[in-house]
Image 1 (cartoon, helix red, strand yellow):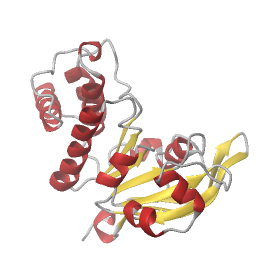
Image 2 (tube, helix red, strand yellow; image 1 turned 180 degrees about the vertical axis):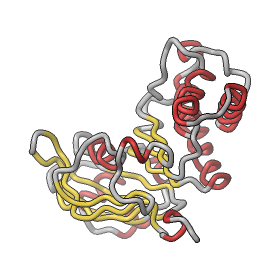
Image 3 (tube, rainbow, N blue to C red; image 1 turned 120 degrees about the vertical axis):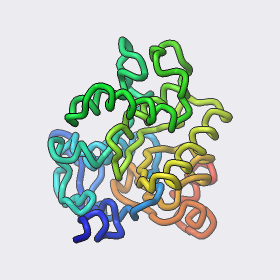
Image 4 (cartoon, rainbow, N blue to C red; image 1 turned 135 degrees about the vertical axis):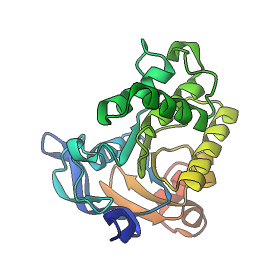
Length: 251
């Protein structure tokens, strides 16, 4: 029998989703699907609620209304969704007093019954996968910001998730390091088949790696466009979309 993941062409589906805080909606009526195997970008200007939406998609924030289906298993639940979903927050959110190897080993030790030697072997493999072989025993403070983000991705991949969430992975990186991170995400998609959801407003990365996207707007409090970013840039007649993709103010 096929698993729920294999039975659906979508890794995540959202219907009539409203998210916010203390009963006040930041975004409302969201409807979109994230295709399996895609690199899907959640786009929009600063303060429009991109990260708030992501927090709801991974179960950190209860939606005000609507439905979320993750990997065919229903709504996200912190206890039940940790294994098939990996998350890397802005900056990597590594534990500063732990080595990179210890950071990546932590979720494996916590959520599996593998012996210590196997845990360490898997952690080594994940760090090599993101190009950090040889840095296993470094502390986060001893490596660059780009390397810290790679280490955060390695930890997010520790339990072999089918769905990976990244919050502003390129923020604060120089252009060369940002391109290297883009290459890593493309490689992970090709080699592991992992579906990646990225919260970002970095245009070069969006056009280079995103296969699909949804664009949110603060004023509209909803989706103003969805589809392939390059197609939206070239064909959309929505002034909000054009202003975002062409880096120009709204008239």
